[in-house]
Length: 277
Image 1 (cartoon, one colour):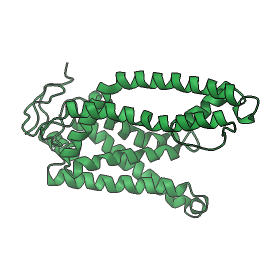
Image 2 (cartoon, helix red, strand yellow):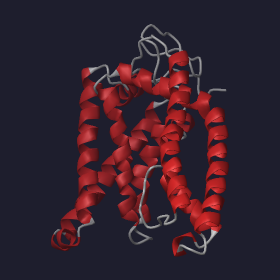
Image 3 (cartoon, one colour):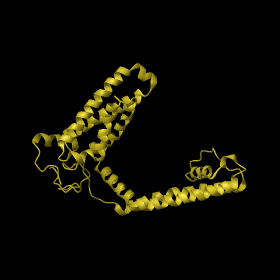
Image 4 (cartoon, helix red, strand yellow):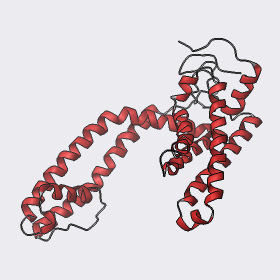
């Protein structure tokens, strides 16, 4: 059930077009200005974490941070005001990110150091895909998500198999190296070595010394390359099956705030409401 079915006033319709659309000059200008502010605010947070810079420019950083926070708070309020269903926007991916972009600043009043969580604003730079009207990337991103969801069951079974495999390898290495090598002092430590070796990370903090242990280690290294390729093959197969050729636009639904509609779509494919324009 929709929160409202009454048509918006021209002012709210215009605000929605400017804030949520990237197909108009005004919408593109708004999003470019927003990206500049986001980039500047993230830069301020990073510079503030450098001690000698923070000591020298502490007052300037404090002022800039609250200027950014006030501007982003106004922008967040305007987004809520300009959509038909504020609740759906607030619980959407970008709605949550927009809230997290301003919340740490207010929390820092009560919790010292909370302002450093403002680097989450960098996630809002994902809007660059809308601004540059890279509908192709939006489509491919959606296709990738579908492929990952479709592959989830297969990948889960595969990871369970890998977990059993490292436990067996760890137990074998403990039998071979335990008592002769202080690094393999327990089965959990041996399992840690198996995971590090199987994933080809190779920290080198634990190494086998016996001939049998080194032979088993070489086998695990070679097995690691095959194991890494399996999830990639699973997702790739799903990508091939789920690939679609439809053109995707940056148009956002006024009701559910979702994007990724086909170029010739008249209705939202997520909530069924009529699209603007």
